[in-house]
Length: 188
Image 1 (cartoon, rainbow, N blue to C red):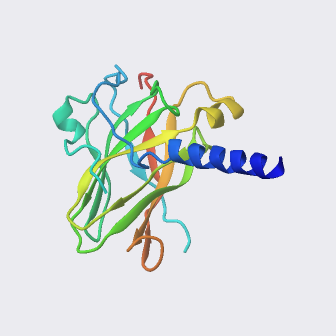
Image 2 (cartoon, rainbow, N blue to C red):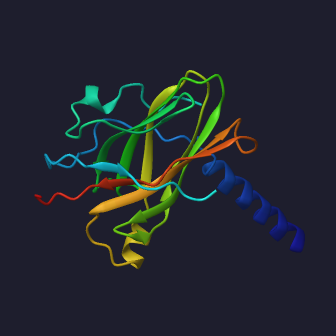
């Protein structure tokens, strides 16, 4: 009886892993509704901190995005441009879109660090690898559970830094200055 139970348990684990083993890359389509605000978020850079498969080749500017492109990071052949914000994204939670271009001769893993919504640290998901010469849209998902736990109903602004690791997870690291994005829909 124990052997049968063990075999069934192992089979359940194998099936669960097989069901969850879809590609870790996210496919983004242009079918998601976008914020209808005409206010363009303002990006500013604060003082520095102390020491695949392509998702979509088309920048949001060619997808009739309501947001102005804003270059947030441009160093050592890596350029990160803000593309748009969808507060009502249907999956994990609100989505901020960035367009990443790797003009360098190296592979880079791009991640978000020090992420805060309205001044409160909240969990987010942004981590993709870009080969030399590769570019594409990169979504940052803000987890609804983090917003709910911190009683955040409206996202007025976010701040984050970009963490870039050359060659993947070890070696040379670049961390950007803190970037502030005003995502409020209020008039100034």
